[in-house]
Image (cartoon, rainbow, N blue to C red):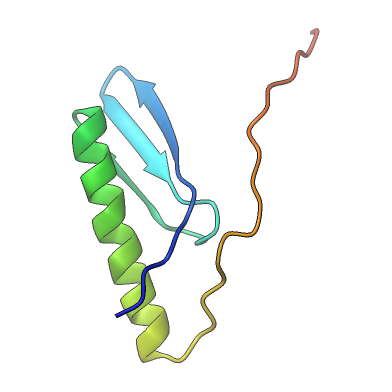
Amino acid sequence: MKNYHFSIIIEQDGDGFFVVCPELQGCYSQGNTYEESIENIKDAIKLHLEDRIATREKIGELTSISLSSVEVAV
C-alpha cells in the first residue's frame, strides 16, 4: 500500500462545505461540516485512485502548489 499526498480546496457556502482535489480532475465532494467534507474527499480520492490503478493510468504526485489572492476592480 502506498501513501499519496494531494492538495484540496475547501469552500463554505450556505449549504455546507464543498471540497475539490485540483490534481485529480473531476474529484470533488461535499459535507455538512468541515470535518465531514474532509472525510468525504478522502473517500472520493481513494475511489479515484483505485480506478486509475485498475485501468493502469498514471498517478501524478503533488510537486508544488501555491494559494494566493488577487484584487480585481470592476
